[in-house]
Amino acid sequence: MELLANAKINLTLDILRKREDGYHDLQMVMQSVTLADRLTVTPAQGAEGQAVSDLRFLPTGSKNLAQTAAAVFRAATGLGGEVDVSIQKHVPVCAGLAGGSADAAAVLRAMNQLTGAGLPTEKLAEMGAKAGSDVPFCVLGGTALAEGRGELLTPLSPLPPCRVVICKPPFSVSTPQLFGRVNVRKIVRRPDTAGVIAALEAGDLAGVARRMYNVFEDVLEPRRYGEIASIKAALIDCGALGASMSGSGPSVFGLFDSEHDACSALARLEESYRDVFLCAPAGADYEV
Ligand code: ATP
Image (cartoon, rainbow, N blue to C red; front, side, top):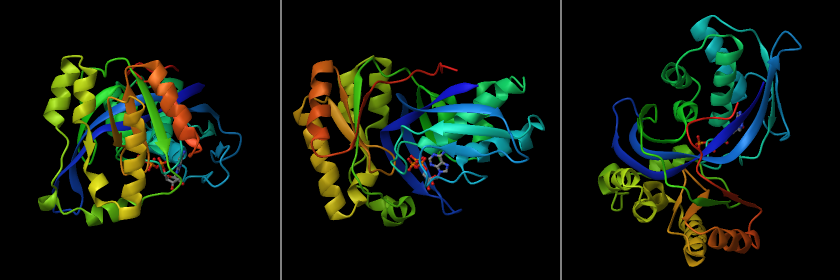
């Protein structure tokens, strides 16, 4: 079975409080995009399933999130045997775009069909939380508000049609370090989450774009902050209606209502960066 595993961007990312269990309660407006890995899921050749990709540094066995998801599905349903998963990676790794979680979600959807389990999306999403906190959203797809650690989902009105330019600068940001630097009581700038949701309901792309923000941007190391700010400035300069960092970074994206402006931004960022992508919002109806 062949599937697409769509990446996500964070239209907003806010941290509401630190919980007693050490995790943080988040509030994020998440959006699937057409930038996607391509997966093939087949019955395993050997006794244990493998996950083979075109990136040699990714784990191939049970540590690959695609295999984690297969194990979660088998444990939760008692259905399905071992599977081999072949992954063409297009979503950059450790980029704040949930590439691994998207692969995990695609395997859950594949096994749901291959085994004939036919579980509803909500059940599959709930199961996905055991494979990672972004997996439930990746199962659901489209546009949604994610709360708690990211597993409490409320579908939202879709982002109006637009172009999305994503740029991943060549460094990684440690998610635990970022959380460690956030002092929830000292957050000064926050996204206007309610305003973004209202603008989505009104079909107002510019209204969404100008209210986006990611609170992690303010706790980046100064030189990383500078690079993220300069990519945002380049996107805005080329005509983006708004730009923000996605997840725990370092990917930055801009939303455009003009194909021409989006192509200019792509060309401009490609002069300095290797990982630059032009894509669009993806709806909740996945191509299988
Ligand atoms: P998020 O936005 O959810 O924080 P991310 O973009 O920062 O995700 P991913 O690319 O999803 O990060 O995953 C990064 C880690 O997961 C890496 O350490 C990588 O080795 C591991 N991993 C396991 N399986 C996969 C997979 N199928 N694709 C990508 N990374 C995987």
